[in-house]
Length: 231
Image 1 (cartoon, rainbow, N blue to C red):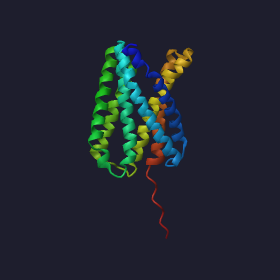
Image 2 (cartoon, rainbow, N blue to C red):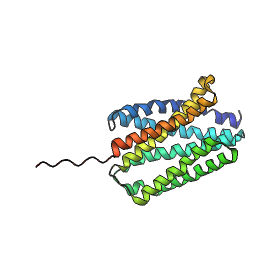
Image 3 (tube, helix red, strand yellow):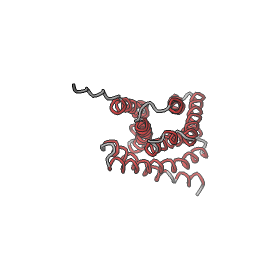
Image 4 (cartoon, rainbow, N blue to C red):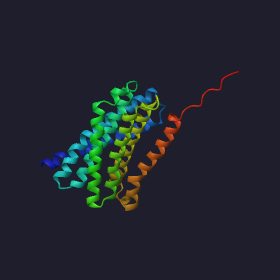
């Protein structure tokens, strides 16, 4: 067995972890926020995402050994992107009452790696004329700019941790659904592999994530009106 074949063997556990992630994402998303089911499903989801990250690394190395440098670079970038989002979702809950710890050295390093890898992928996309790489690469530096603004100005709402948490989970959801639609479903039903469907598989989850982010912001971050005083 060659090294490439050995590394490619991680595809099956990667797919299994992705299946668990897809199921628990919707379980946590549809459950009442803060309920035991929401918390339990969220923890399982993050563990499944950790499994995805661990198994994606050898798959990226396998692609590189096959000479598929663009695919390997993009998969490596997704590892960074998902790893950052998983860490963010977890630390926002863990340190919701201590912003200084949340925005500590670990967070700053993660943000810097995210920005650098995203810029590198966008440059790679420009070199190959690949718009998908350019657009998704920009997610890294744009997300980093948002984090730098939060660290510089400090939290503007006592619910800052909630916004960071659901923002990170939405980002993870985008990655989970793109992987399912673009890789899993396309292999199960090859007839779907035309250009229009592929673009929908990439940009559909991203568009829905933007809508979900706006809806959640309005629901949880909008200031409540002051109570009317009784005369």
